[in-house]
Length: 473
Image 1 (cartoon, one colour):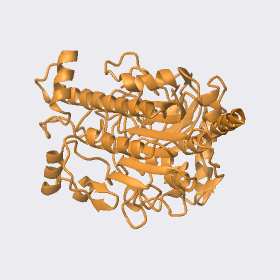
Image 2 (cartoon, helix red, strand yellow):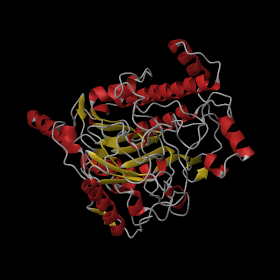
Image 3 (cartoon, rainbow, N blue to C red):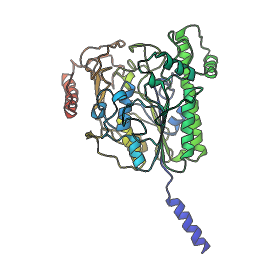
Image 4 (tube, rainbow, N blue to C red):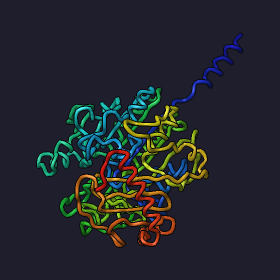
């Protein structure tokens, strides 16, 4: 009898599946070439992020929008910006209320949901992270926040940004007056507390760093945003001079990036200590490419886009191709690469598929635009079918249409604002056609040589605009 009871208990314990947790980590303005696992020439040391690549799958053709708001719209909704913005742009006006966001879908499936860091998806009625599915939230509404408490306090008091309330921290819906030493540490500590408190149930953690987004050291901001410890570490390790603001900007950039990596390591170690690492899907990505001197302001420009053209705010590859890593030892392959075309709208269906939550065919008024990447994460050699994709950035940087290997770009096609941008060398006028397989640097416009391909991709764009009730501009 005792044997039968023991056998029953064993079978019961085996039948209870371990919770499938999800940890989504987003860096801010980190370039494709900043990480050595994507660019062997990068000197920045990020061993913990590199460990994710060794333990999981690296996506080398992962595309987002060239600025943070539309990237976050796609990430949280599985749709393009024009599908679901209430009206341009979502940072102020939010996402349509009939569109279900990722934390809402997971919460409805029984997940504990926690978000920490940058939101940037609206601050009006019904747009707060708590209203959009997060049980717990600690972070800021706007596009950036100063790293140190005294710096942020000074920014708010001096009103040197148009909306100083965006520099305030919120715990839930209440303004937090909690002082902090450094934002990277504060957000990571809050995230780790959330993991510890929810280790016995499935959870979704969104850790949205402000690193390495500025302000970093600049002639207009002559102080380091990194801690003294990390500044000295970088100066010593790389033997970097610090006589000019440009040199100090580079030191600051490396320091805040390596600091972020170290704290990601602490989070990964916590998952291991809690015996959660085998069944937790960890995703690491950047919201767009790194700032380059071509951007329309240059408070910092030390990022590395790995030789790709341009950077943040421009829909060339340097602005929209970003590092993406996924790791889960029990569910996906290890130390593998997926080189097929993938994009930000794929993340919502991928996470839902991993979590055994039904993937909705539509979201709000339009079809879900992304697909689950789980089949390719399980079998990385499986080819990904070509598909057309659109990247629109609220008028800041034009649009591009991709159906690999072809890419159509127009810097003058805008939705909303009318910001003038400079770009680095290469053609810039009109609809430009590139073959990414042969010309990853996007230097050779083929629109006149292949007019039928130009028309084909332009037709995709025109059909999409009509489907969402938008007029071409």
